[in-house]
Amino acid sequence: MVGFEIGAVPFNPDGWGPPDSAAAGLSVPNHPSNVPFAPFSRSEKLGRIADWTRNMNNSGRPGSKQGGYHAADSAFDFSGDDSFATLAADEDSSFRLVDTSAKSHHHNPNRPKFNPRWRFNPHHARSQLPQRRDEEQEAKKREAEKERARRDRLYNANRSQMPQRRESSVFKSSVDIQPEWNMLDQIPFSTFSKLSYSVPEPEDLLICGGLEFYDRSYDRITPKNCRPLERFKSRNFFKVTTTDDPVIRRLANEDKATVFATDSILSTLMCAPRSVYSWDIVVQRVGNKLFLDKRDGSQLDLLAVHETSQEPLPDLKDDINSMHSLSVEAAYINQNFSQQVLIRDGNKVAFEEPNPFANEGEEVAPVAYRYRRWKMDDEMYLVSRCEVQSVVDINNQRSFLTLNALNEFDPKYSGVDWRQKLETQRGAVLATELKNNANKLAKWTTQALLAGADMMKLGYVSRVHPRDHFNHVILAVVGYKPRDFATQINLNTSNMWGIVKSIVDLCMKLKEGKYVLVKDPSKPQVRIYDVPQDAFDNDYVEEPLPEDEQVQPPVEDADGVDANATIDGAAEDKEVSKDAAAA
Image (cartoon, rainbow, N blue to C red; front, side, top):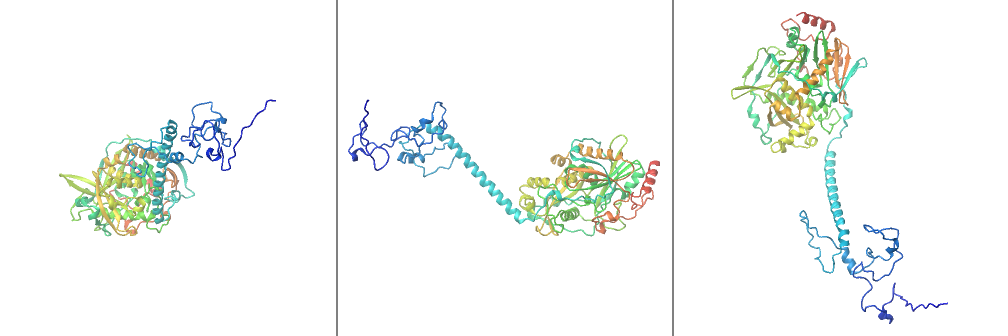
């Protein structure tokens, strides 16, 4: 049996590995003197021959592109080992690539200078570059998180100062739908967007009333020299519906048209796809004619505020910023603004007939009613009463104006403070209003187009203080040409007339009677109901207008028909229609 001699194995009481040769008095063959076992470079396998305690589960080196790397090899590979507490390991851990990109302007003055001891190692370069990109990505993410957190803080701070808001789903119908009403059809707004119809230029059948001249000094108003909004309680404003208008009755008896309406009713239909709040229009089929009416105290007499905003208004009806309170406030602001910007010196432009709704000696707000007729097709004409509020002479040419006022009630809701932005960023203010009041601005533009106004004046009126809804100031007045403004707000006239034509065609197919067109309070669609002839008598009126706004004097027209006898009773209606047809 061959013997096997085991050489002397020195014992090291101070740690792993062979003891210090000088202290133990041993001589290790082929070992340079005074050289420590810890390597100068991790890639050199000095110090340990093998470490069997290492994790050998990975079948390949992370990041290695070469195959044939076995688990057993990891016991001999110390290139990725961080266990050496040597000077080189410490210095390597603080190593960072220098960012030479042009966008980096922030250098760390405490960064150590490059030391020749750090030799360039391609493996290190490969492993560090992706790490640097990761660091940049992480830094960008951290910055984005900080910015998001800052925005959230600001948003929450603003919300905490605002009253609680409601979801849009709680809007209620503008009219109480009665159980005996029969729903005939419902039309989604998506079908309206595809409609298109061209009508020729209208003709003026008659112009009634009188106008005062516009005070051009208001064009020079700025937020710094704003003017208080005055009140005009003595001047009467009329919101008369189609069938209560003696002139329209006369034109109907003269068989001048098939369809009769007013500009506010037509504009509501034309801009229906932009509407959010509920509205309703009464449709009366009488003989071969169609009358589009509004109820007394209808929403159409008020002005919606923040209708298309993403932030709903407070739900409490008593709140000065509730939907109803703001609508009433906006209507009064609009009326007062339309009177204040006139030159009230008694100089008026009179037309063929006086105001058809005014009593003798009564002070009325100056307005011109243009009764205009459009040819819808070979057999159908539409007559509408359209309003213009003022007139101005520019270069010896007379121009009609419409006057409307946008109102700011609380900058926290819109996010734009008019007093700060109107002079320097008027476009931003208008853009915010177009976002929050898209339907109202579209209806004003439509009414200006229907009335043939040469210019529409928009006033910017704000509360003196956000919690004071009685006192206001005019911050600016801006003029726009209706056609240009329609293009700017993406209002298509062919589409507007397409909507009216489709609704009229649908209603003309109905049998004689009374119907109501209701915008669904929560969905973008409109419904048609068949209603009794006595619908919308006094018991249906929810919120009547003040008495002074309900003045409808018994003026008799040329045919002796009482202006107050509305086309409501079925028997009367049919008699009138037969007379009209015979005429």
